[in-house]
Length: 165
Image: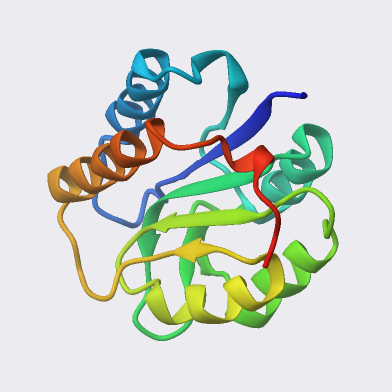
């Protein structure tokens, strides 16, 4: 069986509060290394990811899991840097259309950013599974949440071995 690819997408625009995204991916990799299915996962990272980087990353890595780490906006969705040192919110319909372009690869999205639960409700209709946050969440709490999610799943079957319902 092919390894499950996790695409870690780190986006922290200069116009936003700095986040310890390196600590978040470190925690994910550590938990995976400690799991009994450690050889079943490959983590690929995109740093300072802009929207076009996300498209390229999905195309190149063909991930089963996309883990977005960064900021979310109350109104529209995840926030990414733009090419002019500002920021852009990725609308839910745009994110859904992007995932629809990869129907046989991406099966789970973790949007570890504030206010992403509503966005995840629509994303899960496209890919089957999405996890988001219902409110604002601090940097340390977000990393702990991610670590807890990975730890709970490390004792379960790998995502690639499950059918989509």
